[in-house]
Length: 134
Image 1 (cartoon, helix red, strand yellow):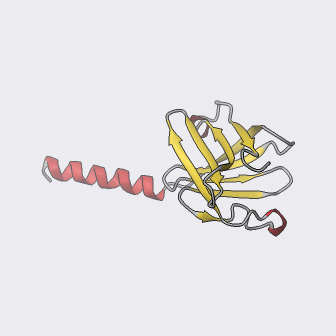
Image 2 (image 1 turned 120 degrees about the vertical axis):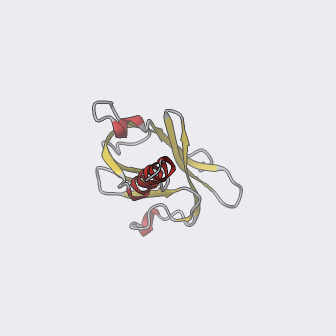
């Protein structure tokens, strides 16, 4: 096999690993309104998806670019369809939603993605809510 064939095989192997990678999950401390923590957070960097489970069992799903409910398992907390986002920045992942009627932010949270790759690093979920909710 020539060098270009080896290079192509290596690239295909790397891409296949990234696409099939499982979401990383861990417990994160919570800083924000209420007493929701500690949280169990599942982060899928490839799919830009974050699932958060609170200590009382509420599940919130954020998927970048999706308009829909973020808590489909609990109809009493249904916000209706909201524009979800999961944005990747150096040292920070921002998660939240916007109201589709006016584009205002309804919720924003962030965490350091390095804490999912290094279990010794503290995971802290910082939450800011009620931007436009009142």
